[in-house]
Length: 234
Image (cartoon, rainbow, N blue to C red; front, side, top):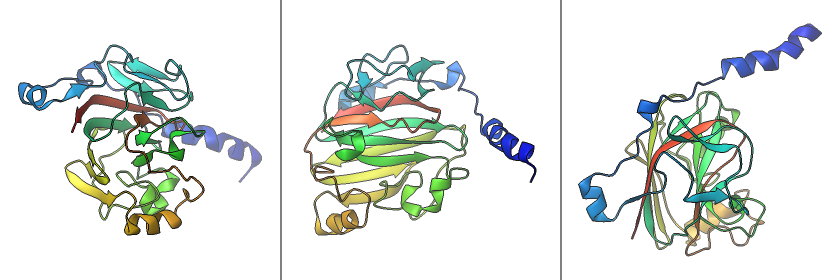
């Protein structure tokens, strides 16, 4: 391949992976009467990031913003975390990843490491069709990142919405993506410890050990949008 083509190739790939932002009518944030009665609350109302801040920061990084009424990551600026901390809870949300994109949802993390990964555990957000991380089953969308691989691919294509339901009760955790279970585990169990020893988290003694912590959204450098983010304390 000639030198000019080698120089052009990254630009062509970037153009091919461009994903337009969602339209305003996609960015819904609502609780019905049954959800309110059951104790669900919104973590984002479509207008501001008042319930969020940056990792080790008082305000969100500039790369996190409101776009068409969705919570959006549009430029690198660090992870985003909830101001509140949660112990036992259910979390529901929809995510929309850009083509070739990567992000993640952190649970029970704190700010004693360089990123949320040093304490919080992650449900992966990924474009399985285009991102190179998808060659590793435990790095695919819906996975308990680097620990448990989904036994199926229930993801919808980049640029469309995927629905998450996470339950964290004591040490027991269940991940669901688009209505199907993708991971179930017990933090601290012998099975979990065995997975941990084969993961990239072996040098992080506080990883997965906290009884409560922040919910976080990962800055992996790619565009991603979130909507209908709601939580219920258990």
